[in-house]
Length: 340
Image (tube, rainbow, N blue to C red; front, side):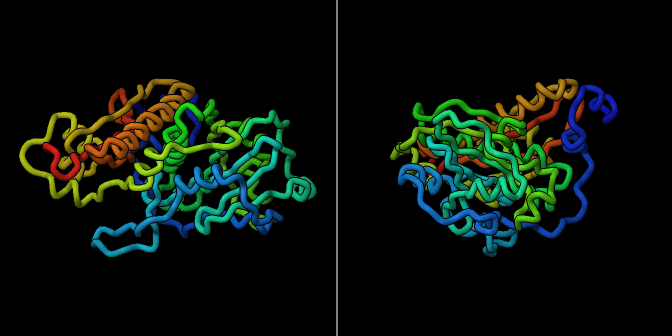
């Protein structure tokens, strides 16, 4: 389907571009991995222990990612995966009293925002509080955009969805309703300017963030012990592990996903699961499909870590061909000792 027809269905221009086969241009200088909210008056403080345990379970740094040559990079792995190890997702908290917290995932520091200072600088006041605690995920877009350019939008949603699914995995029935965006509601919930109003952010020493999802949580969350252990040890298998398994004839579905993604390593997968949407679908359907696909994929990956019978690696970067767009896929590897 050509670009003009897709635009006529109401897809936002950035998402239209993400579906095309046009390759990203060269990389741009990366932005910060986390905002220094202390520049905007936020002060270091500790939330309830259950909240800090929940956040640490999502982003606790592990060993370093490795490059194609096997050498260690400067980027540490996290329990929640990220496309290209960009880790754009930022964590914000709203407690039952309406206090807003930010989390520096790089330093592991919680900071309580100074809302009066925010308003004095012309930032919008947060929406009325309802006594519900929430974890809110935003994306700091610089690093993903610098690497993937016009293909970044689906990847931001993917990374945020994997974070949302991790909260639900850890808390089970304790986790409440989820709201997804981007939307004015999420932005108002945090009391932040639009990301497009870059000057409002920059004059406070911050890079713009895009609020993408919120999950209701208990005032005193209690992550499940088995889920904590599973997520803490979950790591996506390296591409080389899949490549080492290539041989014989892959299943029809594995071959289809390998070809569609342009990633030969997928042929070493034991199995794959994919999600797609019609290229003729309106923007509301495409947006809902992006969220549902990545939430479902993340759940499969986390459940595989819990059972221990196989490991999972997300597959992104598909372009639209024909009448369907493969939104996302997951490639599985049997755990050592498992049947091929």
